[in-house]
Length: 177
Image (tube, rainbow, N blue to C red; front, top):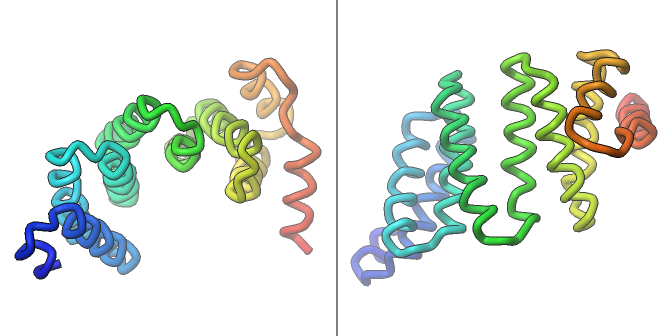
């Protein structure tokens, strides 16, 4: 990182800051992680690297959520979504849509959780992304919390098609084995 800075390789330095944030986050050193993510974000934004900036916004949302700073977390997640949407590449949205689903579940706003997780699942399935299985698990956990009738009602408020109950049940059964 120091070498990148000395050579004026700002993008590489920003990537290193982001990675330092990831390490601090894994160690549960949230203040340290936030410092590194903010440093990477400042460089990414200055250089016009929107996707990288969105990744930093997403991580800042995760940090704020871990610290139960829910208003701040939602702000960071929504900013990441805004950027990902502007880039016009739906798979970029999936991790933040799923994170918002888990965010709302943590806040006990289960109907919103289903909506966000459902949006993430639809894109993940369309693009055959491995994260589809994780999202099905998250939906299964939410189904268990809500009960089937309430889950179906929540799903139908957002989507015209029926919820993927068969797939959710299958993945949850496999996990129990």
